[in-house]
Amino acid sequence: MNENLPPNVIKQLVKELKNLIESPPEGVNVIVNDDDFSAILADIDGPAGTPYENEIFRMKLLLSHDFPQSPPKGYFITKIFHPNIATNGEICVNTLKKDWNPSLGLCHVLTVVRCLLIELFPESALNEQAGKMLLEDYDEYDKACEPKNKSKTGAISESTTALNVDQSNMVRSENMPMPPTQMSAASIGSKGSGASTKDENVVAIKIVGTQSAQRKEGDAMVKAQAGKKKMDARKKSLKRL
Image (cartoon, rainbow, N blue to C red; front, side, top):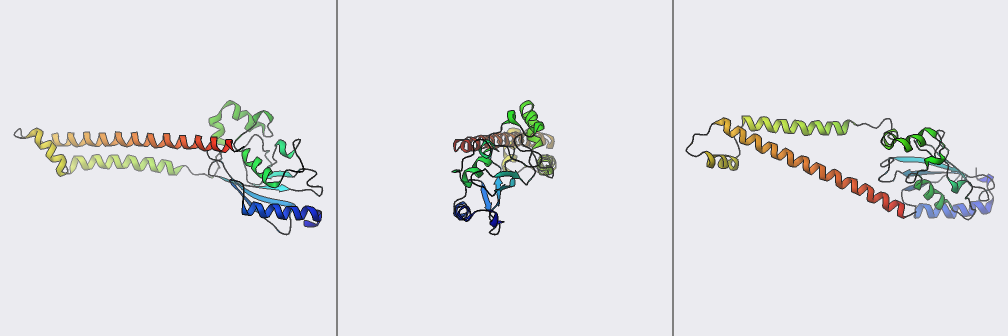
């Protein structure tokens, strides 16, 4: 409750919270409870290029009666797999411990917490399982960070749909007449030679095969560009630290 904090601290918090709402740090959305400034909630966007991308994590800062002389305590309310965040949500970061300074504001604290999702420190892990996995097998760590209720059926369905499209194209090519432009090209090569329907089918199948190869090449380029964007976003986030 607000009565647990001195009036001068409440006045300073009101000012800081107003600034945070009007000009929030990147990827941070502060939730204000006017009746209790001693518990500050915030939603943290998972940074691009990290295992936490596209996720939103709710956290809280608990301010004691002697704040800002003593640092706030930070906790993640949303479950998260992270070497520097305990299974009970407690956050381990030097800014909230030995590096605390009363002049540091809430904006700085929230920015540091979000940066913790970019720069992980497995050597000083609160969650030993996460720290060990991060050091030994990053791919497994990446999978472990995925929300348990996250569905992967979308990617599977997309792949299946693409496969069905290729197969349906093949069937149409074998059983339906070729478009006028394709027929003309085939007819030129077989004029006067009595080319059979089988020859036309072979030409159609080759065309479908070429289209499929071109589509796969395009997909590979899209994936490569997406990977580059993630890396650029990660570098951009780290550059702001």
